[in-house]
Length: 104
Figure 1 (cartoon, helix red, strand yellow):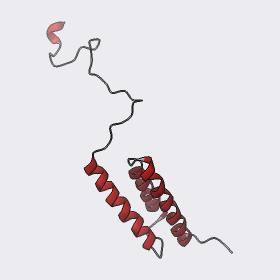
Figure 2 (cartoon, one colour):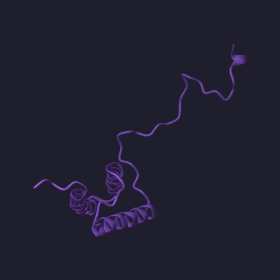
Figure 3 (cartoon, helix red, strand yellow):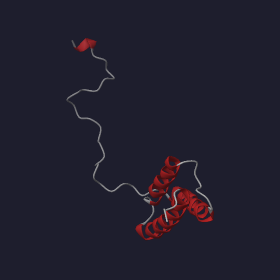
C-alpha cells in the first residue's frame, strides 16, 4: 500500500504546520499602510462634509462606504479612531437626512 502513496502528500496523523493562535492580538499594520488609510479616511470625511446632496447613488452604496470607513478606522489607535468615527457619524446623519428628510 505504501507504494501507492505520493511522497508529497502529508501524513494525516503526523505533525502538521503550526497554526496561528486565533485569539491573540493581530500584528500591527505597517506605517505605510496606516498612512494610506489616513489619507483615504481624510478624503472620505472631507467629501462627506462638502456634500450638499446624498453623495452616493443609492443606500446600499452609502452603507458600503460607511462600512469601509469603520473598517479602516478600526486599524488606527483608539485615540485617533474615536474622533474620526464621531465626526463621520455626525456627517453621515446630516447626509442621510438629505436622502430621506424627516416628515414635518
